[in-house]
Length: 349
Image (cartoon, rainbow, N blue to C red; front, side):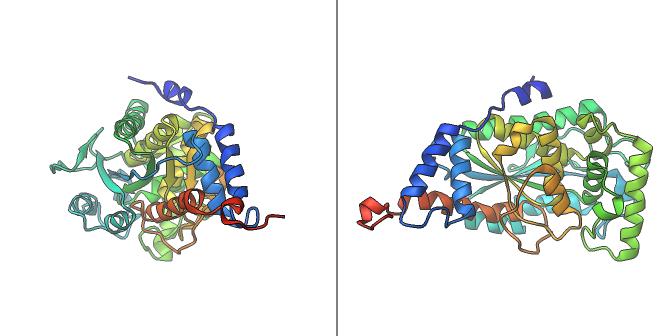
């Protein structure tokens, strides 16, 4: 059973030689140098991650981690906690937005019960439950450190299993009513940002309830007094089981030299934790989109991610990340299918 430190030790720097090879290939194509912008950046990053100039990235999966949150007792969400298990079943029957977008992208949807406050049974469900929901962070810790580590390990192990089956591109997805609250609380604890700037409308609450949510986040940080220099302490005291699971997904993807596309606000909170634990993991991440959730831009900046899409989305589930799969495929098609100046007989200054 790997420790967090052992997971981190498995992450290596990007392959500089492969990235140089991708750059040479891009510069030989019939276009001005750098003219395809972020598509070229994605192509070089994929080469550095996989160690191959033109890797096979056809196998893709979005991992949707699901967990409940005790802080819902504070009235921070527009939806009741019962929606979490209901939405899990929706994912499993293929009816959610992420299912639709994943089908379009040719990606698998892997739904994981890591902390749902219900007993769910379905042949397609990945059962990795650590406990039935977290504690109310406005009154005490979300979970123990051992539970947080177990959730990270669950995500890491799941990626290892999928990578062994040939998946090389992962997306982070999540489901958990109330989970923008622990995400904001973690952001405040790790960055020092004022809660009023970190807390947004979440599922669509009005300004009065948002102000209440700000107070809940402030209380959570004060009550739990997490040690900002101890990232796992912050995750255990303020986070969520699905957030911890996504930390493991990110670390696992990096350890197995796979791309991991980070979705919105909650996924970015997991990405910040992953980077604080393992700075090298940043090179394996692709920032998918800029969420409409207040604080997301600052959260991505703190993590070091630069989103490639601006779609005014705020759904979560991995929807923005799955849309980015198309851009990754486009970057690979450019490398593999575009003519060079020599093969096309085009003059190159």
